[in-house]
Length: 434
Image (tube, rainbow, N blue to C red; front, side, top):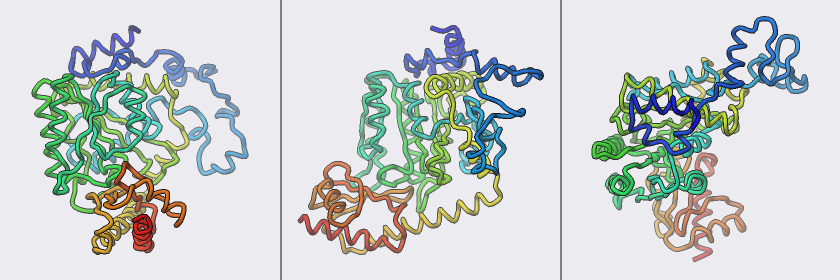
């Protein structure tokens, strides 16, 4: 094991040995090298005559670039576009995102957590979590309504055992009891569990109520108190898109500093929150259970995360970080974001109004939804995949089939005025097949 990894592990062992136990074998071996990047950073401060360290080309005191590209990006200084970004992300962006998290998540106030590290969008953050905390055979708890890419990221790539629990009760609320039972099973079998909480949920579009959220946190704490190490991940990809009665913040704030055996990991990003899907700008943030005494734990985890970023992709794109900074600093940012929120909220509420009309009750039920981009129909009479193909071939309508009964509809990309026609068309396709 590299001495730098040993040093980081010693920090964890001294300040929170439970976090060290949570790490995968790869996670224990991770470190951030004191190599080219460290030497280049030192040279940037002190090499006032010649700096022959970092692998970029320079010209006229700045980065070299092609004018045909700069002509399209002339609003930005070349130094904020072309050089490599720091491995943990631009410091200004990390600070601005931290301020945004605190502003939007009251429960994070007064909590101690790491500075957000920039990732190549949220999927990259999931991959980092898998590398750092999941060995082959470790348990990952997910609801049965889940984003399919989790299977690839955690199951195929990491070899984790995905343990599913029912998402909803028969009455339509979040099934906290099923979650707790599965968590206890993992505690008894492994003594360690990785829990992933994705709200608003993809594919159901559901965010728990405040009471349900508190119950989830209480269940995690109870199992941790029983001796189980828990990595609690909040996948907050659709954060802020809360349209009706539900939690209005991430559970990360309530999980942070909750218990020494709980490590909270927040994954979020500009991708969907700021409607910049192609920018691929996300963040990973850590909080363990020791509050203000845990600075060395945060340092060790940040270094290990930076190490896997360095190993896998070197660093994240610079231009998109600059664009995100400009947005977060803009005086028009909050107003424009609210305008887009209201558009999406209108589509969600229109979807619910159409579904509650009674016209389609013989063809399907629908799962609870109150947030995000999606909702799911639960078909009563036809196979979801056959319906999907028929909709596409005969009517030119695209949807996503999940299993035999569920059809996911992204109301986020349907104009409000077109929503009645969309569901009428789906209903006609069901009748065709019936």
